[in-house]
Length: 214
Image (cartoon, rainbow, N blue to C red; front, top):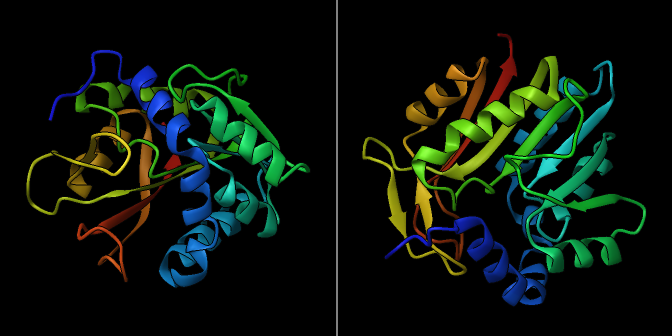
C-alpha cells in the first residue's frame, strides 16, 4: 500500500467516487451501535452548557453524525473535504449547515466552538500530519471546549496502515493518539474501546473524549 503524496486530494476524490453508496450504507449505522451512541451522548452533555453553544463535526461525510448531534440538542454543523459528500449532506439535511473544507485549515474563527467531533475522519491521515490537525482543533475551540475522536485502534502495536474500502487508512494505539492530543493542550476526560460488531471490519474501535485545558 502506498499513500499518495497529496493524500487530501486523493481522499476527497476517493470519497467523491463512492459518496452515494457510502451514504446509503452508513445512513442508519448508529441505530445498531449503542456504545457509539453513548459516547456521542456524553459529548453532547458536556458541551451543551458551553458559552458559544456551537459544535463542528469535522470530516462529516454525508452528515448522519452531524444530524445525530443536532438531535441530541446541539447546534451542530459539518465540514468535509469531499464536495459530493457535502452536496449529499445538504440535500439530506437541508436544515443543517455543511461546508467543504480541510480539518487542518478551517474557515472557522479562533476560540469559537464548544466542541469538535472527528468521527473516523483522521483515519486516512499519515502519522506525521496529525499534530497539525490537533493544533487546528485547539485553535477553533474555546478554552475548556471538548474534542471527541472516533478511530480504529491498534492495541499495543504501532500505527498500522490497512486497506480501507475507500482509501488507505491507519489504526492507532489509543495511548499514542491521546499523547498527540495532549501535546496540543488537551487533557483526557475518558475513553471507550469496543470490538467490531456485525459485518464491521475486524479492527477494534477507539473513542477519546478530551478537554482543551492548555
